[in-house]
Image: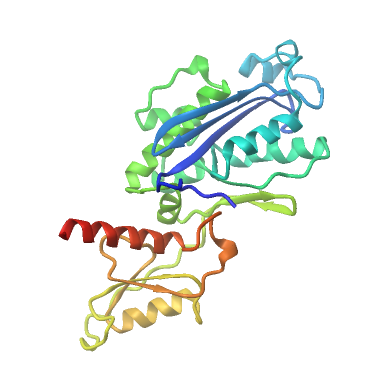
Length: 299
C-alpha cells in the first residue's frame, strides 16, 4: 500500500479535489498536487466527463464548468489510471475526503470498473483534532481562521481548492510538530482510510486510550522506573494492559516516539500493515532516525 516517505526519507502526499457535474459520481474536473516536505512538486489537472450525464445548473453556478468545456476530455477510466500513476503510492489527502473518495467509488461503479487501491485521509478530520471548537471547518472559513489568504472568486476551482487544502495540512503539521503525515495522524489519533477492489473504510478518529501516569512510589530498581516507554507492533496482551504494567513499575508509557522516549518495545509486526517497501513500523523508523541524529551530534 501507500507510503508517505520517499526513498530519501522525505515526506510526501498528494492532495486531490474533484468538481462534479451533478451527482457525486459525475466528476468534471480533477486536480492533484504532489507535495514533498511541504513544497508543491507536481500537478495533475484534468477535465473528465464519463459517463455523459446532465450538468445541474447549481453545480455549473459553483464551478463554471459546462458540457462544452469537457466535451473532448478523456473518459474516467483513463483519468482513474492517471491518478493512480500520479500518486505513485503516496497517500491522498482531501478536504472532506468522504465526498472526494466517494466520487472515485461512484464513478468507478458507473463505469463498471474496479475501485483502485488508494490510501487517504481528510483535512476536515485533522483540523477538528488540531483546532477543536472552531465555528466552521468548511475550506474557506477554516483557511481564514488560520490566516491563510483566500480568494472567494476562485473557490470551487479544483486546483485552487487543492492548494488551500495543502496549506491547511502544512499548518496542522506545524501546529502539532509533526515530521510526516504518518506522524501527524499518530498525534491526532486519526487512521488512514483505504479503498481497494474488495471494499473500503474511511479515515476517522481512533478510539483514544487514556495513558496512565507513572507510579512514582514504585520500586526504583525496576528497569522501567523513570523511563519513557513506547510500544510498537502486536503484543501478547492488549496495549492498555502493557501501559498499566509499565506505569505500575514506575515508567511513563507514551503513545508515540518523541525526544523523551527511552525505550521502544517492539512486538510482532504484521508486514501486511506496513507501508509499501517498508520492513519496520513508523515508530521504529523514527526511533532509529533519532538515534542516528544523536550519535552524529556526539561525534
